[in-house]
Length: 138
Image (cartoon, rainbow, N blue to C red; front, side, top):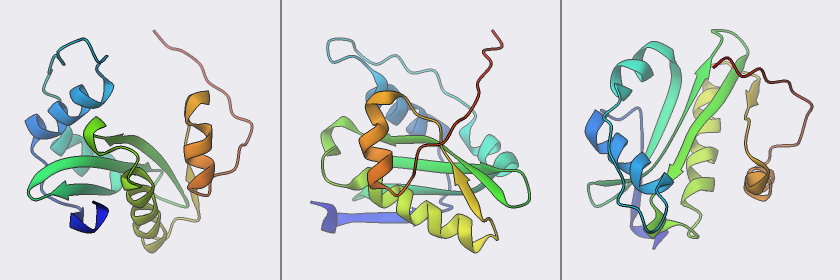
């Protein structure tokens, strides 16, 4: 099915559509996904070096972006694929295309933090584990 997909870099983001994708992707199967519309477009414009969307027809079915320090480091965030399209390499294609954009912007490093159950996905995308630290602020 991936051959029917279109990947768009820096596309015009609709806050509701991207918020709905996130709600579907992170909902428990028995729960209807509540949607709180987030100001995605303005956040991306202010903080992201690049973003990529996967579209089936004109429906957004996957997304990823990277924030940066304005120099050599970028940080991969918000990788998400609609549950109906998982297992088709959509996520890995999004990450690959994002990495190309980030490299083209002059970054030399792409960082990602993830939960342990996503280790095999991110390793397959080319990331290697490193030591990192985290402080919960709330």
